Length: 186
Image (cartoon, rainbow, N blue to C red):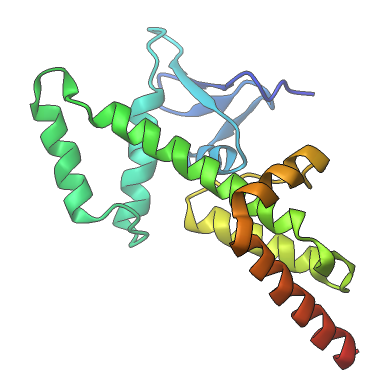
């Protein structure tokens, strides 16, 4: 079994074909994008020179998705990225982007923990399917940044309740009302 903590090593041959060293087969850019959506880190190395080509191929994946009309990056963000390349040292853009994505992942995680902590609906038939659809939607909307969340333990539930305060109580009330309506429909 592959160690998911290590990056998946992809070797690029002189013919420009990409070779997955874990499965011993050739892969496409779309395959690599799929690995990344599944949460794997990848590293793409030129077999002959040993150069790390990961950045180049990740940018190519983004460019291909953008050219197919899957526009995730607004034009003003693209302009800002180009401007950041013109500043000595790249400016603060790399740190800003990293912090922004870290905050996005953290807030998504907290949102899912809060939803799982308020779990009276988990007894409703089909709730797991609904939750899976919601996770798939979040993953699609964030370009794979969303991860699979598990139910929080008791300490996390307490933290979510303390942080949510009145909002959490209101959500619990609404969920209880929905559960009541759903049980009447059954």
